[in-house]
Image 1: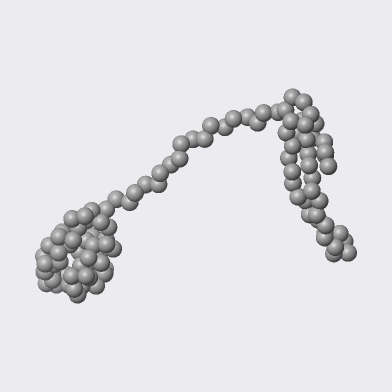
Image 2 (image 1 turned 135 degrees about the vertical axis):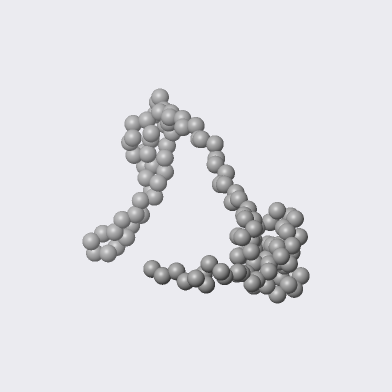
Length: 119
């Protein structure tokens, strides 16, 4: 691997101080990169988003991403089994297809106490 002598003597020619001041002025509202870029674009600065992003990263101007809000843990209660007939029913439609291609639907009504079909 060859490292050229000019690599060590190279000095960067670009001056981003004007852009840094504009970014600090646009970042007063604690916004992210895209809102800062839109504000600079409205001021008609003429910098593209890649250059603004490079300077923002060089300034270590990173806004933390908001974490997702976690819902509280749901309390899992066991299902209550009925103590006698006709207290709790469940209703469900069931559909099927016969070998010849004809379809049919059935309404099932079940009693939870003895798991018997009421109708």
